[in-house]
Picture (cartoon, rainbow, N blue to C red):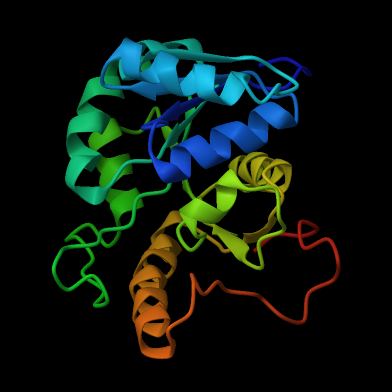
Length: 228
């Protein structure tokens, strides 16, 4: 990776979360590749984003090709598709940074936290992908549909990973998406961020609000300084 902006593959980029992040990153000049199970579907999503005139044109490929061509791979798929998608990209992500946004929601009780045996979806991803892949988790608590609009989103992003430099790289992506990233410690702490999504779903239902978010109080304007 050079001093130029990294190439981002958004695997599952035709969904609300992936599409929203891809649009925001392309608007900031990041080279973005939309990944999907079929290249045609990915190209249609890329064309939709490109119609808005982003600073950097978006490309569309199937998931393995997108992951292979990228510096950073962002996995934005529902929990039910998590393992199949990881299996599809496993052979091309060695040595890369993989950002996992997966929340282990298990219908019908999505307002109840149901974490996997590994402790979190992110830890399950690391176990499956192997030691050569650097996994960081983020974007669990952001309302996906709000990313498709330019308005400010009142929500911080907890970023979990075992290496400070990897968390810093993801926090830069969070900022490029118009949000504030917070060092939230090692990957094991992703369990808290993932479970919090179920808590927020319950809050949304109970108080009849549109996508509650989280905000970490007591921080300096730039929370990236220092180690978590």
